[in-house]
Image (cartoon, rainbow, N blue to C red; front, side, top):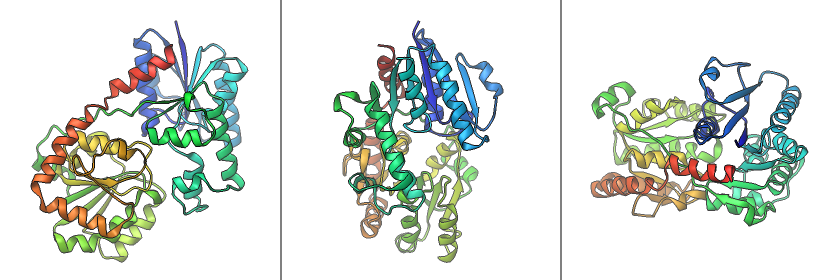
Length: 385
């Protein structure tokens, strides 16, 4: 029986891609006859739901001091790796670094999943760079950012296999010095379920009137939400009933709230915070279009979910987006933060009903190529070989 250790930074009941991905993968590994263990940082020392899972969950309390929790994580990953055949880390640094060290110590196979550049994200959030991810790759790095960049590069170069969700990210990881033969592209899958209630009932539950332009994502600078708020006065000249709804939380929240207040857009732009999958489905049921003005996407779950919901899409021609969206067929792609083209794309889509229907229909066809089942089966094949 194959024994797989999954090392992750977050896990259920936390909300986020790695949390749901780790839960799904571990369950499917058990169904395939393997033994799975999940090691995670956690806001709870124990979770009652763990007893109902078909695999073991080991939690490291996130409220311990930083040095202590990382030390405890290493010793627990080492203890678990000793009895495993393969160690699979769901990020390069907080889980990947201790997991790789333990795997090397006990001569175990080591896999890592990379969904972005952690050094770049940290630099942006700390105000250490104004550059987007592509330019950042060719820049000299200093201080803690340089350390993070070296660490994630080292983890990838010393792994047996690096799993990435797009050809774009494969190129990024290869640029860190990882041989291309080590990098495996496994596209993200989606299991989005549209709302089971009618549009009018969904509208009553959501409580936002008008023609809704929906956007979803973590409230960070590169997601371009500031530009959405900036162009709202122009959008109101196209349709006075336009409303922008932004779902998500993050460090940019106060900045965005201040922008909405200063521009007098309190009843035009709605920052509604994080929402559950069912609630997101309700917002998609009442939205007229989806807009993702992002400067970086490794591979977007939001785009796949939007297509599953049959919602017309406008996004940017960056990262993994170009591997899903076909310009003018199943969506519009514009330049990131391009004020004029964003407004024109929204105007064209709003005024052309046939185009909205075409994007919705073609989007549903496209998303069939990106199933959760395919993603998990391809990952399991690698882990169990």
